Amino acid sequence: FYISMYIFGSHYFSPVLLNILITAVSAFFIHRILISLSNGRFDDRYALYGTIYFCLHWSTVVWSSFLILKEPIVICLMTGIIYFILIARQSTMKAIMGTIFTSLLMIRARFYFPTFLNAITTLDR
Figure 1: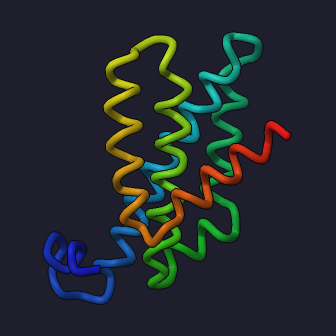
Figure 2: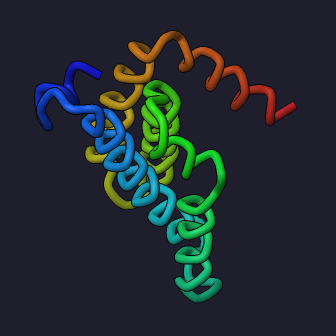
């Protein structure tokens, strides 16, 4: 909240604009995740459709309309972690640095990271 006021000025739209920018970063990560998961099996338009679905989903539209500050940040960091884990095959150093950086930010975001790790580990069972 304070970062958006510092960057965009002390107006009501400042946190809303920050939510929109964070959602755009999340959409970029989701698009890159869908492209890397396809491995050339289907056209990139499906990645585009998935990104459009994310951007027009009702909860994403609500983020950019109200002052919900924590949820867009958590989703952006989660998609960032997933993206950096998926690109570990191509660019190892970039993936390690990105995963460490987004994980550290996730730890600061009110203990969502342990819950995220627990959800990943239960998928294998």
